[in-house]
Image (cartoon, rainbow, N blue to C red; front, top):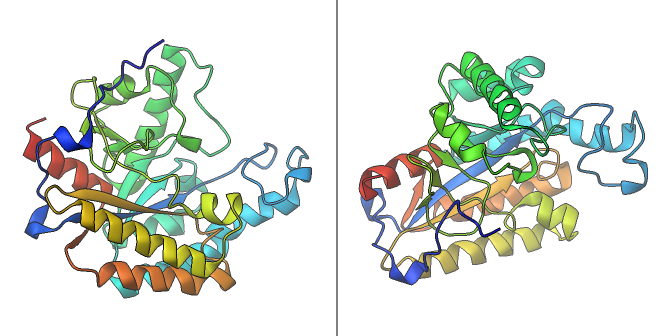
Length: 287
């Protein structure tokens, strides 16, 4: 079937986007804070054991994130004055409340990211998915004190009904489609797509391609410089997608610092959140 969720819109034929303060780039950190079930396979550094239950090698690697890596990342974000847009599994609110507290103290944005990163909506009926999404959104709202406005599916997964079900729950944007440098309107009333990078993403770069820290810094700089050039006449969005069990391993951490230092000192960059990007675009475009 043809995709009915959004229409084709070449970027060269759109109305110009104007970010606050005349910025060319709206930049946000997409910080994935996730919980994994101990008896399910998931993102792995050593695939040979991923089907074992338990799988200490891969589960432990992922578990480094909330135990250690997050706290190393927190210091860097604070030092550079960057607020996170947290892609939040609702199970995190129960298992790692200290992380929720740290984010609330800093005024971070909270994006619903499923119940955990071991359960996907694939195969759910419409009613099953509605019940699932209602639980996820409600649990996050109760924990962070505000209803999430955005959605990122675990592993960027959706069903054909997800955006309209999210709209019913009061959400206004999704990050799953990763096909643009600007926000755009979905064919679901009140719903937008906001850019999210699957390439400038620490899992894709370090786990998928085994690149080095200096490679990461060069890629981040190249991404920002090209988007800045592209945005001479109409604003662009840059996301930096991070997972603390990957980027905040001790031997990689300094390279994230170098990348953030380049971004925050780059001209014409609005340091913001995915919520604020969606809100500004919706107001400016009249959606």
